[in-house]
Length: 348
Ligand SMILES: Cc1cc2nc3c(=O)[nH]c(=O)nc-3n(C[C@H](O)[C@H](O)[C@H](O)COP(=O)(O)OP(=O)(O)OC[C@H]3O[C@@H](n4cnc5c(N)ncnc54)[C@H](O)[C@@H]3O)c2cc1C
Image (cartoon, rainbow, N blue to C red; front, top):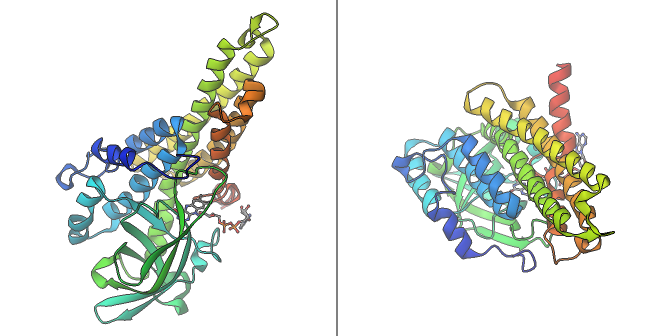
């Protein structure tokens, strides 16, 4: 899947059949009735094998389903939750070419037209877009009001004027699609506004605050996967008549990696626990995402070194995990943006 840059449809089908795409969706809407913490565990486990699988389950559960559960009205829940649990992949479309970290500078416009809105603009970097049937998309319905014009829309792939554009050819996370979206007077019924008109900024911020915890879990899963490969190799590879795991230099490296993974895991689990308990968690979520993505890159890099030369080849999975780790410091708020959030809390 990494080489072909395609996520296998049969695996996606199994995710739906296993209930992994509707973990928090209530049973009456066809989901599992689970918790946010369980989403975090699912993303971690999948990411230990393939972080691209992790991000599909992550965006679906912790962003799209989560936002619909929190802000949709009864009619929207009835229309979309059973589909999201059964067979429809969801995408979250906030970023644009000119608005990344400064997400509220988005230029996509929504113009009111009777009982519908007409949306025009372009979105960039949208995960899962190649597979998605439903897009939670942000556009500004009142640019004069600045960010207070930002509104969230539920857009079906088949809506007139909507098109999924170019797919990016990436360094890592290659099996996860990342595409451009093109909206050309895209017709969206008013019944598909999520929450209130002009309150989309709140939906965007609050879903990202929670989604960040799950990116942390993607990164701790990835790091754990790399560590496990390194341990297995250290027990088997022989040099100087001994397994390399018998050398203290290698043992200490593995011990440091394991300590980093454990520390990051506790940050992620703590943020998820606080969120489920209804306590403030924004700073803890930023710390969890920041630290997990830093250590994931480090642990994957050290895992390659434990493998020696074969570590950089495609014979073993550690080079892929290293490539997959890079995105952790960038999406759902770069490391700098997480530090800004943490510093704000410290300094007021
Ligand atoms: C693979 C992938 C998948 C993605 N998936 C999605 C998705 O599903 N939906 C979606 O909406 N978006 C998605 N994104 C977009 C992602 O969230 C943005 O790329 C990210 O927020 C950074 O924005 P940018 O790329 O414009 O970088 P910029 O904002 O231009 O940042 C460039 C650099 O400047 C730094 N910087 C910017 N502002 C500040 C500041 N105030 N203080 C200090 N440093 C700063 C950043 O930290 C960074 O190092 C995805 C991106 C990628 C690469």
